[in-house]
Length: 240
Image (cartoon, rainbow, N blue to C red; front, side):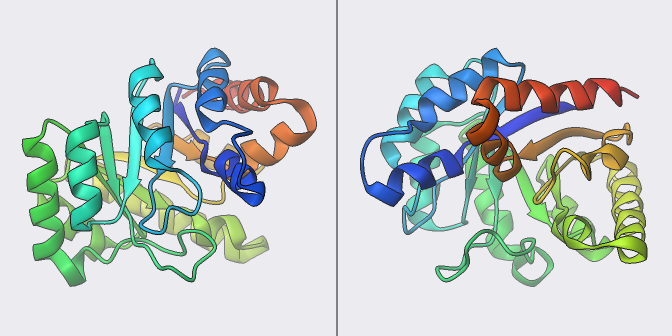
């Protein structure tokens, strides 16, 4: 079955709404692992709108599975990553005005900068993933940077309805196949929930899904462990 990596950013979002110390994303991460998650994801943004350095450093000490740091290819954040040494660093685009990451990284358009960031992170014994749109030229460019992993942006698929969603699913499937042929490990994430995950969960070439908002939203109603466990059960049900 595919692995589930739980993004706990939005636990920190709730905390920062009151600028207090709860709920704690560190505790949420521990509960996620107890419920069967095989990875924890956090995005240390340049504006520190949710996850803080404190969270990242404690998570590095407490996460028992795999810690994935989403990050911009910015000098300050690269230095922090090299100090913290997450298991995986996922390079993502970042805009101050966006509510959440709106699209994939334009690797093809900034290949030299991304390649240098990949080189530095790998030199620090950190695996590198690139968060990109399911476009062949972006996948090719990602391979050329030397990154081992890509995470396909599933936002357009998640937001689409009816025939449009079918078209977006086909686009994702073609991208997965092409990336697999190039020897890249493939993950997927953004906007995935307890319903739209099913078609993708059956794709054997996708080895991990990164899901945050939907799990945190469900956790508000049923509790964090149960919300994670229910997503793990879906992936198990769709075991390839």
